Image (cartoon, rainbow, N blue to C red; front, side, top):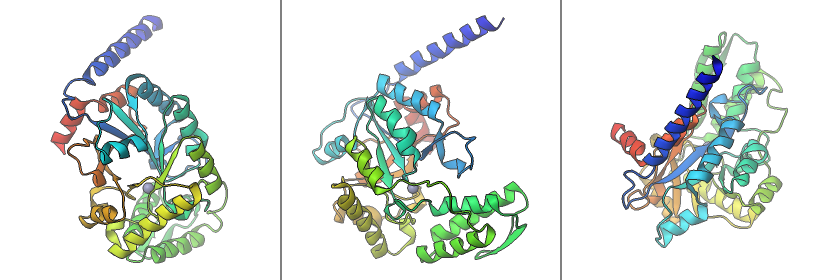
Amino acid sequence: MTFPRIKNWGRRAAEASGVIRALQTIGRGGDNPLYVLVYHRVDDPNRKPPVGMNLVSATPAQFEAQMRLIARHYHPVTAEDVVNAIARPAPLPADAVLVTVDDGYRDFKDTIFPIAQRHGIRPVLFVPTAFVGEGRFWWDRLFLALEATAAPETESPVGRLPLHAPAERAAAFNVLADYVRRHPSFEQGRAEVEALCEDLAPGSGSGERATLDWDELRALARQGATIAAHSHTHPILAHIPLEQARREIRQSQSLIEREIGSALPILAYPDGRPNALNAELPLLLREEGFVAAFTMTNRCAYLKRDLSLQLPRVLVSRRYTLEQFHLFLTPIHQKWTQLKQ
Ligand SMILES: [Zn+2]
């Protein structure tokens, strides 16, 4: 009795995707949505060591299916297309999708870019330039140290934290990561947590390199990837003095120009949620010559209405089925989401 069930399931899935395809065109109006997808990592959740799995946006199989769907039913655009559409201004094609990836993990080179390239899609990689070739992001260093430690508790900069149960270690991660992100001196906050990591699990920061280096980024850029700014050290820009934020932005942009040969005037805000921004940052970016900046506000962008230095993106989660992923990229779903926000 398995076959009829599978057949039914297949038919229902096909019907659902047909309905969703029809939904793509309803409610587009003259104000075409631009779907800027944001991924962090694409990896197998069972991989060891498990590095900050909340950053895994999709498995390789999910990502392949999503890129196939984009290539088949949407218009993949490049970061240059979006900059031109804003600067000229000129309209983008209907159902435009820009694929963006934050942070510069190795899986961009190993998994994301080869799959995207196979489907004719040119993704953007936003890199915090201080970590290029460094091996590891501080948040993964913290995650691994908390996973590896045998200590039942720790005396941390934010007080005593219990570490017995996995839930306690997860809570400790959140508290300490927040401490670094909000520290008035980001470098000092990071150094304090680094010392704590070394204390908790000596040597846990070594091992397999997790971040790409400049040679790899140059090779990816030659093959069609866009390498773009994501600040230098990945602080929350709204939490540091404005002149320090300016230095973060300038340093990131000038390093990309120097190492890659050119840099588009675009940036993704580190963290990118509403409290990671303030009213001054878009003005600062404009002064620095930027044309587009991307947040983590979860919705599609309308270039005619949205501020180009605060463009929302559609957040991808590995919990989504392909049908849900497709449904999110429809005007009707986006309008419904915005009503709820
Ligand atoms: Zn980031």
